[in-house]
Image 1: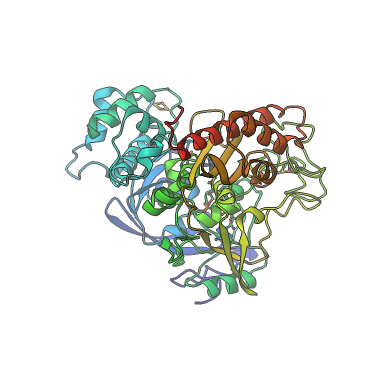
Image 2: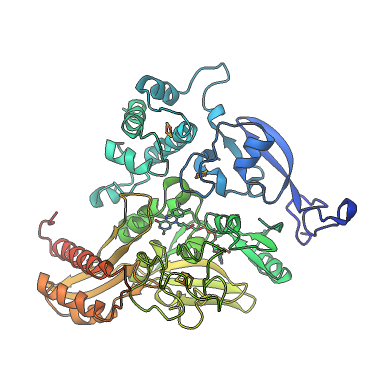
Length: 198
Length: 335
Ligand SMILES: Cc1cc2nc3c(=O)[nH]c(=O)nc-3n(C[C@H](O)[C@H](O)[C@H](O)COP(=O)(O)OP(=O)(O)OC[C@H]3O[C@@H](n4cnc5c(N)ncnc54)[C@H](O)[C@@H]3O)c2cc1C
Ligand code: SF4
Ligand code: FES
Ligand code: FES
């Protein structure tokens, strides 16, 4: 592999070649992202986060930039089915990944995801800024519980049982603690998540 | 953020070579700490050598009854692994007490060990900090140090190590496997992180360009029970003010073997060897536990605003050891 290049060599990837007027063009690489089922070929500065690629390059503004430091969860998306903070992921590291944002949760026919319907029915938001992250996070959390992943709320005895975890209110609160809501809609978010798992 | 080259390494040797070729390079695991510090300007690598896709992923069961955890295994996958949960619950509990579901899905085992302190002066490039910029002074010593160390701190630095996982590894007598230009070597987890001394910029004994490749856990002792408990400012998604990891084995009501480690108190997970020595052979009565824990914490030198940590840590440890003693004994657990 050529020094400083990504797996698909790109002239700009390694060195910092002088650009027009002598200014250095920042190193960039070609990145393929499959987002909500559609493949996108992008050329991105290595500093671009997945969140900025989604919002700034693909104009998918559902995922929100709350803190940009992994502290609020507003930027949560699913990468290869797992919930992640897109503000701390460099887009170049996600080459080839399958990304789902809030825009991709429902069906292409325009039907809402059951969790989106539950949020509406429970009125689980006020301003809605945290909601896309809450929804993606909840989809990930529900899958984790179904796969038998324990949480801090899982008791010592249940810890040794690798079976699916029942999402009690306490389990949901703990598993969703990475998503802050400045409007304090937490009780209804917990109810909405439990509606779709009951 | 400063521009940087990006290299995705296909193998360990390739990663080490790429790191050596780029002075000022950093390895990239999950990026949950490094990318954050790059945004803050605390880190400005010339190149990122992405090791997150190296085939050092997964938990291997060893013939000895031990476990080898690949350094790229994500925190959530280690915590959920059936063998980890069954043999070393303290490790699952420590991981699950840290960060959030999203962050644990991203964070790697190696990156977790090597995460930097959360000292707010370290994270603010406009402030003095001997760890970030040796010789500039320590902003925290006379500033905000409520979260800082009470044991083993130096004139130069009073920071704590933030990892919950590392505290459990210290109590489990884990080994850390490293690989670099000089080949492979192994360091005990309890000796991997340093005290700050005169070189607070050096968090660990890792040599330049070395990669953490795996963590090896020994087989659990006969009848061993283990537990992690963490005190923090909110119930979830917050770093430890103080935490305790302990593993206990009893023999006819007396302590055959005990390991105890504190988090949140020092520049490294604090292995409580003085308390352990006092407890071996003793009956784990509440009085004996308290005497041993207080002997361990007697050298604590709190600062203006973090004296609460000494009492907090003592109470946590007595509580955890008491709960383990009741469980190891077969007596019903005291809630
Ligand atoms: C909001 C927030 C809350 C958090 N709360 C907690 C908490 O409560 N408890 C807790 O323990 N942690 C907490 N964390 C920290 C989190 O656990 C760490 O950021 C994470 O474990 C780091 O792993 P990573 O793979 O993302 O590391 P990276 O960010 O990729 O790397 C960290 C450092 O290690 C180096 N590195 C990475 N892998 C290797 C390797 N294999 N060999 C050599 N060097 C390597 C990198 O160069 C870098 O210097 C929190 C983080 C955030 C953002
Ligand atoms: S405690 Fe350590 S990390 Fe914090 S300001 Fe002082 S020298 Fe820097
Ligand atoms: S914007 Fe990513 S966690 Fe806040
Ligand atoms: S609905 Fe406003 S932040 Fe959650």
